[in-house]
Image 1 (cartoon, rainbow, N blue to C red):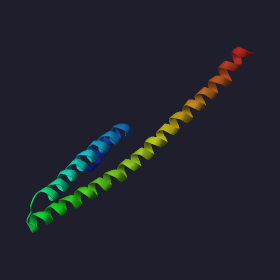
Image 2 (image 1 turned 45 degrees about the horizontal axis):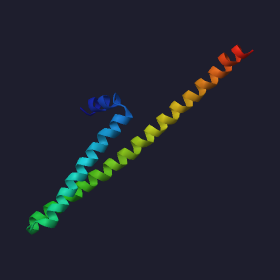
Image 3 (image 1 turned 180 degrees about the horizontal axis):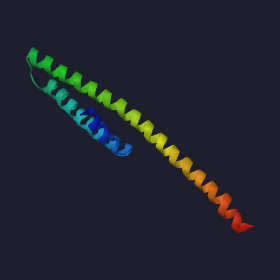
Image 4 (image 1 turned 120 degrees about the vertical axis):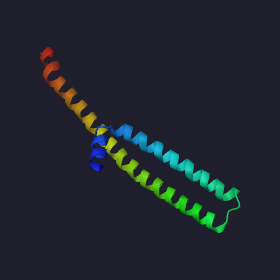
Length: 105
């Protein structure tokens, strides 16, 4: 099952994966804000308060995990961009050397 999921993710671009993780992070952040609002506004029993604090801890851990994944993906995206620019420069150099110089001679 995990291999199938990894194969599907390989077909997804880095940019779309970043978008997907940012959406998940935004949902987690919204859930965290709702939980914090609930903890401030409602009178909760000790058990409910502990459950809510546990939920907030779990959500915070998810947000941190998503931040780490986003940081790694942004690094990959940066590397892909640099490779694209390098290929463009090499292509422009070849064009200049082989085609531009022949027409100028």
